Image (cartoon, helix red, strand yellow):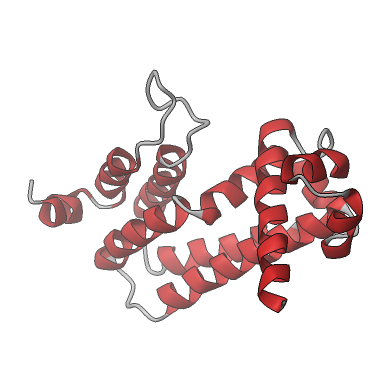
Length: 191
């Protein structure tokens, strides 16, 4: 029975995340989430008594994903090879839940500050960026930051990347690699 409870909780999380991104946290009601899931509000309340509880769950997941990235970067030596490897890994992570969770945070910043505070996600992202920047000059730091933005935007279907508004992760990764380390991307892509 525990597996079914987890499945329902996961479905609630997925539907809520989709609705929060599409129409915003404030405009999404628990009734709409329940209707989308085809369950009663009582069933929804059993798993998440409030919308805030859903948001806290989403933020915990995002923080856990960032912590995994931090641990991965900490285990690697600094330098251009780290940047190339990290951008590939980051592209994979962003194409999954991480990208949608970041999009949710971006679209709902005031709510995020009110419910979970400003620090949890921001502080961890700063730690991650600081680890990536270890020993780098200002130009390299800017290149890395722009590369991360390229990966985020290229994996985000709501950003106009072509006329169909479809994500283009391969293009984004290629541009990101060139931004982060032009010499390293020429070697890694064979150009």
